[in-house]
Length: 325
Image (cartoon, rainbow, N blue to C red; front, side):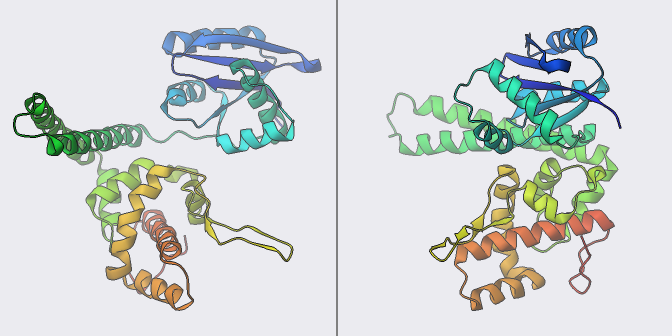
C-alpha cells in the first residue's frame, strides 16, 4: 500500500496556502501565488520537502482551485477535491476555535491524513471547455435579464435609458456569439453530440438542459452510480428524526452541485406532464399526500437517474425498458 504525504491547500483568488504533514508531527507551510508560476513553485517546494508520494486535498469552492487541482493531477499527485461541508464538520470535531488560511490548510491536511478521501478525476478537456462556455452563457443571460429589468423601470426621458439599451444590445450580441461557439464545440466533439442526443430523447429534457447536464455531470469514466450522482447534485433525500418527539419533514439535502439542481427544476415540472414514467411516479406521490415541492424534488432525482441511464448504456430513452443505473 502506497504511503502518501498529506498536503492541505486553502485556495483564495490570488494565492493559496499549502501545509505539508511530515513524519513525527512536523509540518511545512508556504504561501504561493494562484497562477501557473505559483503552481511551478509549489512543485519545486514539494520536491524539496515531501517524503513520498503526495496526496493533496483542497475544497470544492468554485473556480479558484480548479486549475491547481488539474496541475497537481497532471504532475502525478493524488488529488482529492473535498466538499467543504466535510471539512467544516471535521473542524467542529476538533473543536477548532480559530480560522486563518494557514490553519485551514493544516486542517485539510489532517483531514486527508485521517479520512483518506477518494481521488478526484478531472473531466475530459472537451467537457471542461463545454462547462466554461455553458457557465459563461448562464452568467450573461442573468446579466442581460438584470439590465432589461432596469431598462423596463426607466422612463422615456431617463438619462441612463440609452446606456441600458446599448448594454442590452451588446449582451444580446455576446449571447448570439456564445451560442454559435457552443454549437460549434458540440459539433467538433462527436461524443458530446451523441450524449446530447441521448439526453434529449428523455421527455422533459431539451437541448439547453442536455448541455447543462453534460457540463456539470461527473465524467462517465468515474463510473459513479445514479445514486451517487444524485448525491453529488444534492438531490438525495434528507430526514430529521430522533426519538418520539422529533419528526422533521423530509427534504432534499442540497449538499452538492447547485447548478445541476437549477438545470433540472423546470425540466422536472415539464416531465411530470410529458414523461410517462415520471407522470405516473408524480401521481403516486400526490396520492400519498406528498407536498408539491417534495414531489418536484423527487421527480428531479428520477429525471437525473434516467439521464445517467441513457448515458451509461448509450441508448435512447425507452419508457418500456428502464435501465439499471
